[in-house]
Length: 83
Ligand SMILES: [Ca+2]
Image (cartoon, rainbow, N blue to C red):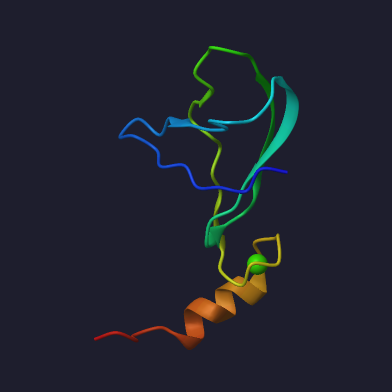
């Protein structure tokens, strides 16, 4: 398993797996406040491995893998904070 960070450009593209052997992998992107994004990637030698426009779903504020009323409660309990 490769566990690393990738930074996307202004179009949402990111290069991944700089030192991973060629093959087919399942890529999971996890980021706070969003559902995990999972896709199959085929790593080829000598070719930049770029993920384009991952389908990011925001709203999983408690990180349990679903967007539901528990996430709404997180918003409600923090409503008005940070002023
Ligand atoms: Ca949630």
